[in-house]
Image (cartoon, rainbow, N blue to C red; front, side, top):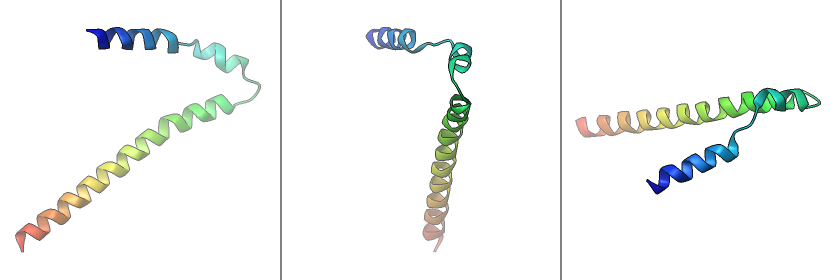
Length: 65
């Protein structure tokens, strides 16, 4: 219960008007950062998934011998 209240408070403090922020920037750095911020976590998750797959495949091949 207390944890959900903490998350609610964090959410309230972190909310911003994104369009206002984009309009107030002098260049397109915010949009670039937003794109990179979306791509980096996906890339990291793909790399982790591939490592788990490779480890499991290697482990299964060793068990069959």
